[in-house]
Image (cartoon, rainbow, N blue to C red; front, side, top):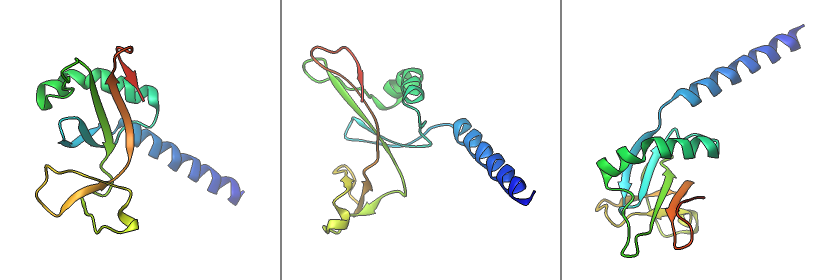
Length: 130
């Protein structure tokens, strides 16, 4: 009886967390290099990530000027998780998994790499999601 109660409580807690996570809106924390978005609460499923991009690409273009097409008319947009925020790159092996941004003057200008979605266009592909 006690095992069933514990299992039910854990299942209910898991369902509540999944519902909360799916209903939390995506937060764009920062934009760097004209092609990198740092976000929080990004959808877990690829189909939902693509749907979010399709629903918000107009707003992102208007507000941040992304995607910015190159001289050939192609573009790449990198969506990264913001994680625990900016960190200082100490130049050690521990920091080898950091992505640093030159457009930040502060010493804490790196984030831990957490690629969530890449969107782009190329010569033979009008649009791709990776």
